[in-house]
Image (cartoon, rainbow, N blue to C red; front, side, top):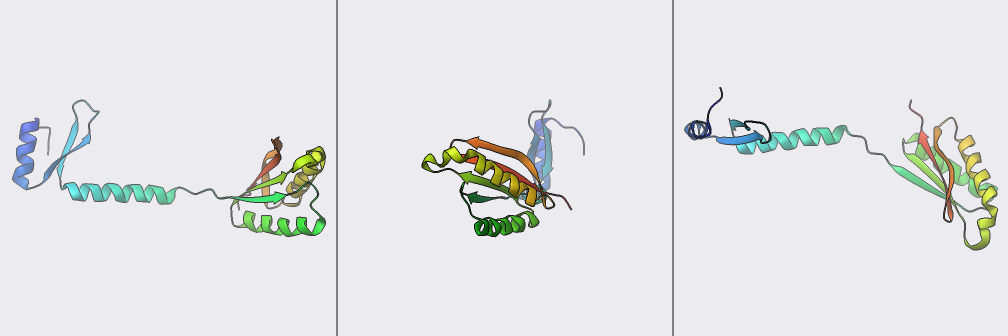
Length: 145
């Protein structure tokens, strides 16, 4: 088509039985197109949906330990952690200290570092164990295949 003043563009749109749609209002002069408005909205929604489908969603799975978690419970939770990492989810493992068990900070750190070492072939440590209040947390991300 071409560049037209507003009145001329409106009359052309009416002549074709279409709508005058403002595409870029911040441009100088504003950019408008003569097209079917419903079709324009449909195409725009379709583009947004395609972009949303391309973005990957990050899933974070949590595993909770106590400072005195015994061997069987540790192995059981480690199997779940392996499953989560194989599925491609990030893992947030934490040791929760209740009451006066906070004096066993070293035990919690050893437990989390052991978990990270056991899961070394499936994931890499994103964040080393950090104590936040009554929780000591470690993040493990799955390795790319």
